[in-house]
Amino acid sequence: MEIYEYGKKDAPLVLIQLVDDHDLEAIENEVARIRENSSADFRLIACKVGNWNKDLSPWKTPAVFGKEDFGEGAPETLRQVLSLTEEAGKTYIIGGYSLAGLFALWAACQTDRFRGVAAASPSVWFPGFVNYLKQNKIKAEAVYLSLGDKEERTRNPVMAAVGDRIRETHQLLLEEGIRTTLAWNPGNHFRDADLRTASAFAWVMKELAAQTDYLAMTSTLR
Image (cartoon, rainbow, N blue to C red; front, top):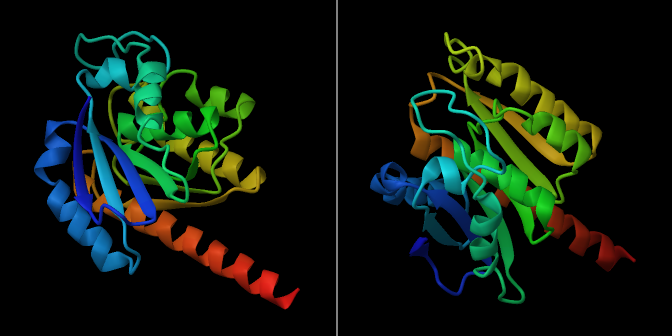
């Protein structure tokens, strides 16, 4: 795993994003957009994985497109990510786009280290994943979900279920009392990934800031 860092190194808010080469090409633009949409100082740690389908998949499943099957490398990837979250006093948000968004949701089921999840166009079509969420509650306080409004219009029968699965995931989080939103973006899965991811992180940052302010206010009133 290769690490790239952006923003303020000593910021109390740390964003962790799983990325590939394509994400890195636009990440400066993503960081700039997060700054535009949030007044909070932050540090973004971009973790580039070596094998996208293997390193971010929680379990094995046959190829859905192309010829490459999905592996079960997520536990090892999470172990490496958690080594970046050991500084006391920091607030950690995990996120990403596509399969990295799915990984972020899965990771938040394994640990309470992440206060928020920024899942932009997450691959919740992944076989068995929504059923997994029903049995393993996400431990984060705030979760952002999004999808392109054309993503479910595909001839691939597995991936065409993404619309139903994202709605199901959103409803599940609401029922569990997790602060969440489901944003619909124009276009297919390959449009504006950097902007969608920036919106995801910015929303979670604002939600956590609002909750912190509320808790501080109620504590003062007591």
